[in-house]
Image 1 (cartoon, helix red, strand yellow):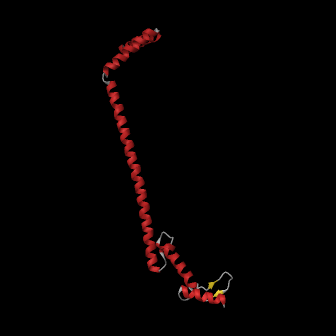
Image 2 (cartoon, rainbow, N blue to C red):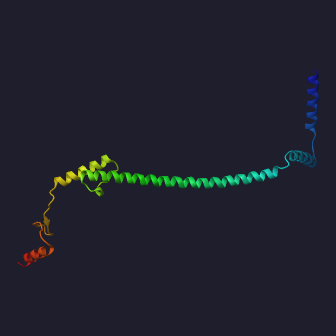
Image 3 (cartoon, rainbow, N blue to C red):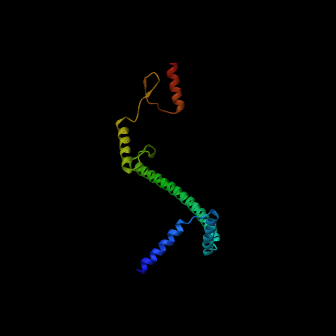
Length: 163
């Protein structure tokens, strides 16, 4: 019974306060007193807020510097990876060139298998066609293979022209 009485009295007080209307100056005074009590709880709030802002700025600056360093490291790692890859490809081409006798500059594959296939194709082309093609003049006439020194070749040519 006592609890019901206390609850009814509290409810009555709340109802009376809710029904009361305040002027603007009364509201300003109530709010000002409330803010004053809160500010007294935290007297160094402004100083702490300023320090927190400085710390956030320092962390942001450090983070930006760290991000720049990470981006630079990633770029250098990518460059190093590309260099390693090109060196591996060059080593593979040199190895196949030594094993097959085909110049490394003719090989374009990036794996040893691809380079071996290319070398085999180049070698089959070389052996399928004769090594000594006839010398053909612009008129399409077949000539003998040229032999001798350049002076001798010139003399032979002149004798053919004036004969």
